[in-house]
Amino acid sequence: MESTRSVGLSESQRAVREHYGEVACRAGQAGGSQAQGSEAQAPGGQAPGGQAQLYPSADREALPAQACSASRGCGNPLAQAGLREGERVLDLGCGGGIDVLLAARQVGGSGHVYGLDMTPEMLALAERNAAEAAVSNVSFIGGLIEDIPLPSGSVDVVTSNCVINLSDDKGAVLREAWRVLVPGGRIVVADIVLERPGLPAAMRRAAACILGCTNDVLTIREYEGLMREAGFGEVVVEPYRRSSWQSLEAKAERRGQQALLAQLDPQQVDDALASAYITGRKECIIS
Ligand SMILES: C[S@@+](CC[C@H](N)C(=O)[O-])C[C@H]1O[C@@H](n2cnc3c(N)ncnc32)[C@H](O)[C@@H]1O
Image (cartoon, rainbow, N blue to C red; front, side, top):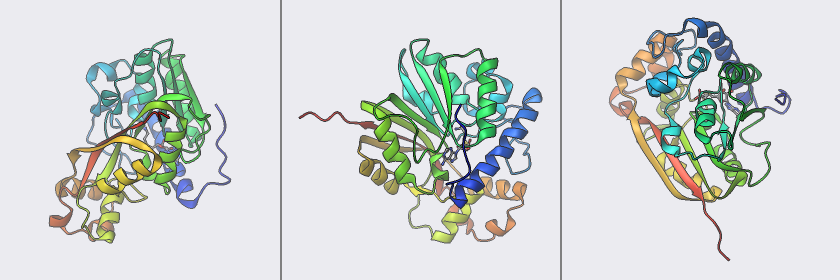
């Protein structure tokens, strides 16, 4: 595991790293007595059981408890990725390693899965989880998703689960994902998007922040545009779970974010944000 130095991090990256460092520590403590899918919230607003309820119970049961309690995704990208035996996969912002461990099983001993994250506490937790799961075809790498420390054309699939919204340079993340993919390789991301482009900017940022997207969110059209600018073809952005006003209100109240809540118009923000799957392919250039 390479180390992640804080020099060179932007202010927002530092804030994200500090937050997820705390999440990793809490998950490490809570893991032994996990409550998967619990509605109860730990400080910072995350369920101590994490977001593992997004995965089939058979997957959860096969994982170390702390991989589930650290889970902070907004979907199950592996359900969309169609991984095959022998493939090389890179998970951007792997956190405690839930998607890395599940992918490792799917690609088998002839495949390999890299988990990239900038938070040392998350990487340490992911390493412990991989050891506990006795999974050996994985490597955890310290670094930034905006500057991926892997050679060009080195992986078949890039996955990511609720991470790209945290970046202050989402275009750079997608360009880097494209660079490390082999021609014909695919990207499968779960992320939060804005379905209602007309929402006033202040309201959009406040609602995104309540959902934990501290660096704003992209509209579907913006996401598609950045994917295409990065070089991806076959781009699809498919929302699958909308955030109702009631769910935003409940989250904000649990987290003590009344000031953010006060900026929202219930009618305008109801169902405006959604979890979505974003997929694309690095097309082969035939000359
Ligand atoms: C919301 S959590 C998701 C973790 C994991 N994908 C999951 O589903 O549980 C976001 C993770 O991305 C990492 N992260 C956020 N921004 C990053 C960046 N710019 N470079 C590398 N890692 C980043 C954080 O450290 C954290 O572990």
